[in-house]
Length: 185
Image (cartoon, rainbow, N blue to C red; front, top):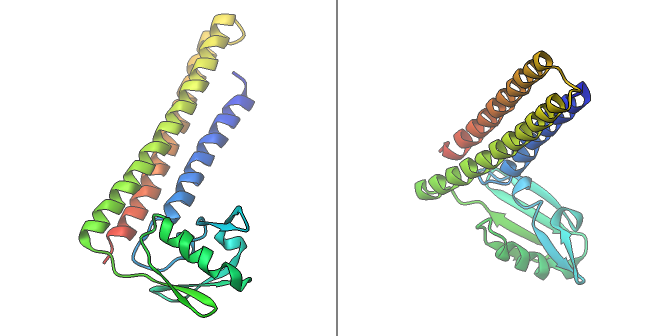
């Protein structure tokens, strides 16, 4: 296995951690964040469109998100999309803007959100392990074909395991930070 393949595997593992981190930004923590609604898709003239492409999203207060659409005709579609989404917030249409008040999280809801965080962390770990398996299989195939020596294959396998451990630890660190944010009262 060439160093290019190892670099590619490491890059994919880093990407898995980045994607998980971006996904976790959409998990409520009791504070208002534009990341909560940026991924909501709105039916805009028959086309599913991301909310952040239809409106300006701001956080004027710690417990409120304000969505100001550029086209007033899309207000009701934004309201429907937020109600349909699984973010658990009730939109309040106020003339030309949609306001989302972020209520404090109950202990039960915090526990549910922690489970969501753990589920996403496990998905990222599985993805990283799958990448490790692919790299390991490629190394073993190269060893069988005779393109990689036994000692080199062993060294490369150890290297793959080290980068796997590094990114699994990164998943745990990022997930732990998010879990603390969710549990913070």
